[in-house]
Amino acid sequence: MKDEKKKNIVKNAYGKIARGSGCCSECNSEQVAKNIGYSDEEIRVVPGANQGLGCGNPIAIGKIREGEVVLDLGSGTGFDCFLAAKKVGSSGKVIGVDMTEDMIKKARGFAEKHNFSNVEFRLGDIENLPVERNSIDVIISNCVINLAPDKRKVFKETHRVLKSGGRMYVSDIVLLEELSDEKKNDESLLAGCVSGALLKEYYVKMIEDSGFNVKIISENKEISKTQYDGILLESLSIEAIKV
Image (cartoon, rainbow, N blue to C red; front, top):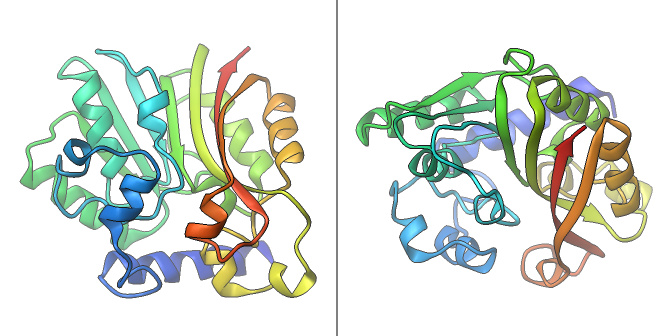
C-alpha cells in the first residue's frame, strides 16, 4: 500500500471520529482514558476533548515545567495539549500538530471556549513539521507515530525542532511479532494503530539512530487484550533525549 493511500485512510477515519462517527463513536472514551493512566481530574479539564484514542499518558511521564514550549504530535482534538498547557502556564506555550482538518477545527473550538490562550493548533504532517528548528523544549505524542508511513522522517523531524537536550515523551503501539500480510494491508487495522506499527526493537533503534538517548519508561502488554483483540503488541512509553 502506497504511503499517500495510507495517509488518506487515516485522515478519513479520524475525520469521522472528529465529526462524531467512525470506529470510536461508541467506545467509552472515559474508561479508555482511565485504563491508560489518566485521572478523573485530567479527563474533566476540557469536556469532550478526550476521544479515548490514546494508548498511554505522556503527560504523566513528561516532567513538563512552567515556561516550556511543548509540541504534541498528532494532537487530535487537543486533550493532551490542554493538560500540558496547565503545566507550562501563561509563560509557556503548547503547539498541537495534526493532519486532519476536522480535528484541528474541533481543537481550536475547545481552546477558544475554555480560554486556552497559550495553546496553538497547526494543520500539518508530522513527517514534515510546520515548526522552527531548535524551538521546542518537550515533545509529546500519544499513539500517533505508528500511523505515519515514514517513521524515520518523523524522528528526524523531532530531532530538528527540539532544542539541544530537549526531551520527547511518547506512548505508542509496537508489535511483539510480525503481522501477516493480510493484517498489514487491513485498512481498519491501519486506522486502529496496528498494521502500521513496528516491532518494538526496531522502533527503539530507529529513535536512537535519529540522535536520541532512549529510556523505556513502561510497557503495557495488557492493552492487547482490552483494546486490540489479543494481537501480540504492547503500548510502549519512552523518554528520548536529544543528543
